Length: 111
Image (cartoon, rainbow, N blue to C red; front, top):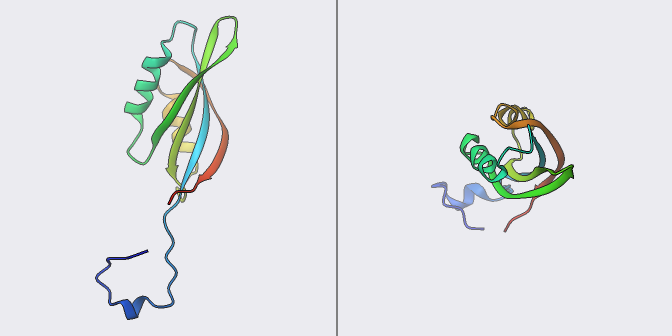
């Protein structure tokens, strides 16, 4: 990995370069009713999220009696103070969302 830091290469010898990691959260979003348009809800979520969060994927899943929910795959910085608390609060305050559950968290490896 080539670094452009403005620091002479000799000063960097012996240092280990650590990339800032990201995690992927799988978030279950339950709508308030079966009348909520899930495509519009995904749009509201994308607009409400600060820049450090990104919706990678959104998929619908069947709950019961004609009601569908959303499963969102959201990336965020690995070292984020408060963990998922802020994200859960942001999503819970969006009109049309009844509840939010973080189902899974894993580290995202990229090259």
